[in-house]
Amino acid sequence: MAAIIFLVGPKHSGKTSIGRELAKLLVIPFYDLDQLIEKRTGQNIRELYKKSEDLFRQEETAVLEKLLQKKAVNEKKQGIVLALGGGIIDNPIAMAILQNKLQKPEGHCVVCLEVSAETTWQRITSQGELPPFLEAETAEASKEKHRLLHERRAKDYKKNASFSILAEEKSAATLADEAAVLLAEKIKQ
Image 1 (cartoon, rainbow, N blue to C red):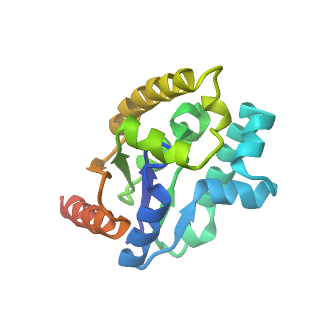
Image 2: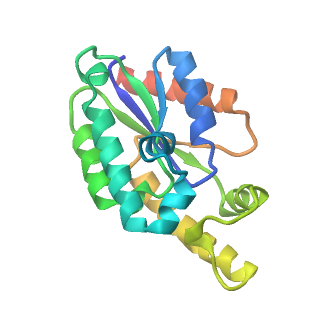
């Protein structure tokens, strides 16, 4: 399989854990865009974003572009699974790169992980400190900010997806199996 499988969805939807499992099933490499950004910059995502959202989006774009141009992906015709950051949908340059890649004949696809706003909120708050983009004067205001952001982005994730899977209350391995089945069906088409 020479295709790139992009995993999209909200923060804490399981893109990394499901992506790792899916890559194992397909016997292809797995990459997490946020981890690659951290490796390139030497800073964690939260620190980078706090410095400047624009700086973070520039790094996101640069890392995405570099990975997609990588010789291992293009010359060996080896596919990859790539977990994209939850906010990539708000990065028009990165999305243009993604859309351009999806126009290629290699059969690249976008898998959207659907999770409710309430579930992602619980997962985010269990981590302790809120991400900078959700900080507000009160806990309720932060939760409402999250809900609105989640709902807006969810529509865009689905609009850009080849297919979606409901990623609540199932293990990463089970969801990877579901994604692999749907990918196989898509390849047959």
